[in-house]
Length: 261
Image 1 (cartoon, rainbow, N blue to C red):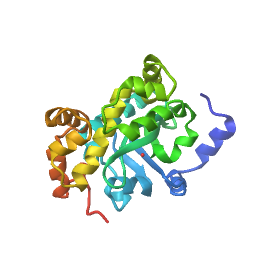
Image 2: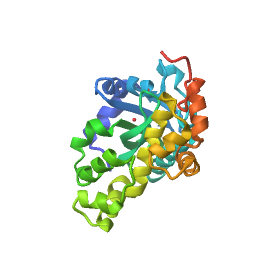
Image 3: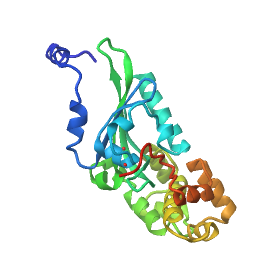
């Protein structure tokens, strides 16, 4: 879209600055980042630094998602970044797993936009992330499946029948699946599994229960099926995840001693 002449004049008049990062320092709960065309971080606000366990921005510059997050999450972030730059279009209202300030996966709302040079070429991507829970009242489309989500959150440790979930949202099973796919880009069953994996991360890092006990308590058939689903989404086994936390080598790799869209 062509800029208005007054816009063009304004942006040509200003020089490079940290204005964007400074602005996002004053938006509570919003993490801001910008990456270059090589997917390296070139700018981030303090909320983003807190999420990834880094005390100063300088220690983050030039790093990629693969140095900050589990491979499964980094692969997802990289694919979105590449799509935004390739298609020169934003990706908005992405509900996805991100790392919270405790170093654990949680649900976040992400927006990503391409960054253009003065000549119109794409030179990177910038975006924001914020907690889904804190912002959900402003996300109207998601409220259509909120009863189903709340039912899942209350009963995810039990055997859940999708027909029961659909009934809570006053939808048929097919309608429920379609809305989950449209809004969350996943099926209701995948949402249940991801919630169980998120909770497993918390229990593996904070508790002493055996992996088998955790698996059974979260509704998995056995330890083998739990390990398979965990590794598929986190890139490592539950035992590896626990050992990394016990040794201080958490999946969100710190780039310097700790003081974490």
